[in-house]
Image (cartoon, rainbow, N blue to C red; front, top):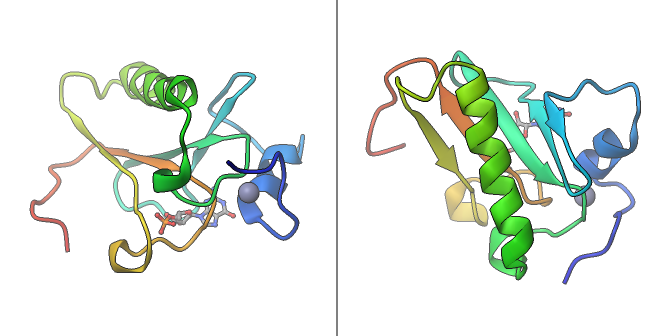
Length: 116
Ligand code: 5GP
Ligand code: ZN
């Protein structure tokens, strides 16, 4: 269920690069600012372990750590009261572009529903 690091994976490269700025990190999970933000606040919470899709992430403990970092980050950025959206894109129809699991945290504006 996922390897530690995958050659050619952009998120594996970013996580391994000490020069890359992170918003939060622990032994299992790293948070990054999205390079192409879709809202005033747009972060990615990324497990260090390379797993391609959320459907393949069969590890409740790691899932819990991803969510708790997302909520902690959102609260730390003042989004707790205004609200925020958590999104995993799973596969082509969802528009997944990076096949290393990441949880989007979006906030800082009124988000529309349904999503496009
Ligand atoms: P997906 O479409 O797979 O759900 O989301 C991939 C996200 O990764 C996109 O929002 C995209 O902007 C972001 N992204 C792609 N390459 C990089 C990168 O090199 N650095 C950062 N910080 N984000 C990236
Ligand atoms: Zn990876």
